[in-house]
Image (tube, rainbow, N blue to C red; front, side):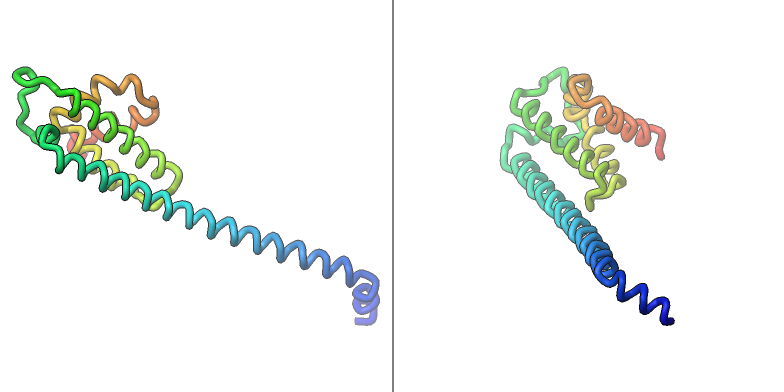
Amino acid sequence: MAAFLGWLSDNWFLLLQSAGIVGGLVFTAESVRQATKARRISDLLALTDQHRELWRELQERPELRRITQKDVDLVAEQITSAEDQFLNLAIVHFNTGWLLTREGALLTQEALIKDVQFFFNLPIPRSVWERTRGNRDPEFAGFIESCLRRKRSGS
């Protein structure tokens, strides 16, 4: 015990310094964890707001009514520029959601997969997707295509 007290009297400052460093590291780690959680929540709220605005536009603009219809004849009535512009915004919105799921945001990939399967199997969104997928991020395009293959195979 005397040896320990002797060591402590010789090294008390180093011990105190080390405890301060460890305490600082623990505090920093907790701060980073809290900031990451806050950022994820903020990202999800921003995506939710964008989602609401995008789909509100779909409901409020009569020229976009065909987008969600399952029985559309694209030969008789081609896709309009308003539909095309809206769908390109919707695809960017899906891309943002996909990026957030990859970063571990609060959005689940399963929910995104179901939305992709529903939306991109509608005739007009599917047509715009097929025409523009080559201009998209290849990983995102692969994700959309894998979702659609899953839907077709029934899984």
